[in-house]
Structures are given as C-alpha cells and as structure tokens.
Image (cartoon, rainbow, N blue to C red; front, side, top):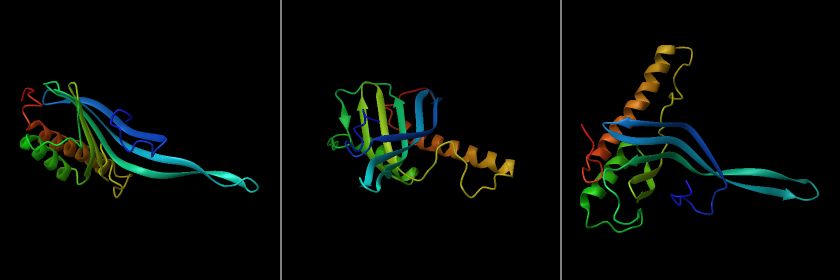
Length: 165
C-alpha cells in the first residue's frame, strides 16, 4: 500500500481481507479487499481521550505481473495520451468493477491498481442467507468469476500482458 502512495499521510491503519494470489490465463496476480483508516484521539485530558477511526479508502487492490518491464515507473497522474490502448483498458476495468480507480502504478514488471469500490473479491454477498450453503457457494463463485472477467479486460492489453491464452 505504501508503494502505491495511496492517500499518503491520510491513513495509519490498513485492514486486508481475502488476500488471494493466483494465475489467470498465464498471468500471476494478487487481489485483496482493503480498507485504510485514519486513526486519531479525540476528547480532553480531564474526561479522557478516545481513539477514533475514519475510513478513507475501501476497495480492491490488484497487482499483476506483466510480460514487459515498465520503461520507467508510471503512476496514475502520468500523462498517457501516447498510449490510448492503455487508457482504454484502464477505463474498461474501472467500469467492470463499478468503481473508481484511485491509483495505478507500473514499476518493473508489476502493475498495481487501487480501486474504490463496494465490490467484494472472494466474498459472499451480504444479502445471501448464510444457512443456504448452495447460495453461499454460488455467491462466492460469482465474486471469483467477476474478478476473472475484470482480469480478462486487463489482459486485452497485449503489450503489458502477453501471457498464454
């Protein structure tokens, strides 16, 4: 998270859920649901101080190993007009996870994305009856399949991801 320079100086606590590493169509990736919290004390000395948390980020962090090495580190704020295929891929991915890309970073052969979204990777939807094991299984598998579809969008950029079909 620190390497992504995500919300630098605005958070002190990082919560990670459902961290998974795997291989999809020959591309190695890791994904996790992440929350970043700003932690501070509030109150007065006489009555006591309380610790408070404000969530400053909730979303998905995805890292993929690319087939090529970045010519130099590329951050989200880098102007990419000379690579419309790259920006098209980023925009399509953002739409597929129904979120907003807060930051992306390509350094060496690692491409990282931080997406602000309510999509839960490798989770069971909150509206699923947990006593219905078939429904739980279907919901969990659906979240994995959704990640597969999102990764397929990234893999369309063959300059970055020239893995086997």
